[in-house]
Length: 174
Ligand SMILES: [Zn+2]
Image (cartoon, rainbow, N blue to C red; front, side, top):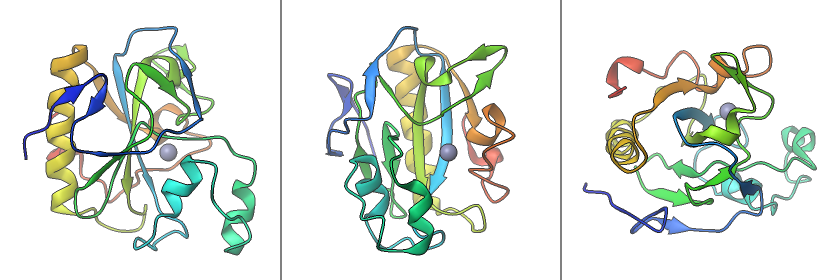
């Protein structure tokens, strides 16, 4: 697959504008990899998309109650089949990392791009996801300059454990 960017959006990706974004105060030099499924381990639904749009019904599942009131979104979600959904243009700050620190710098949202993989910390990711993720990383570096690639758990180690032990860093063009 050949990806391209226009106006800070991936051409051909589905696009739903999330309100959970703000202007950036710093240049982009980091990519943060996450994984999400709601409920955990259930991949065949659009609950993460609804969460990022503040449209998730928190009564739908017991595990959703702790998410109520959260205002979060990644820039982009990679589905299990490799299809892409974008929520925030890359030049804007998406609210994906929360309280975080990378190399002595706080507030990683300000200088990072957040990529969610539909998935679980307890399961393998798909080949389609790795393939699209690598295309995306190459494209982002070409467009915005070189960047480090880290997992969410690396910048918020006391709070977060995604993308988890099944995410294979050896398959990533970092
Ligand atoms: Zn995360």
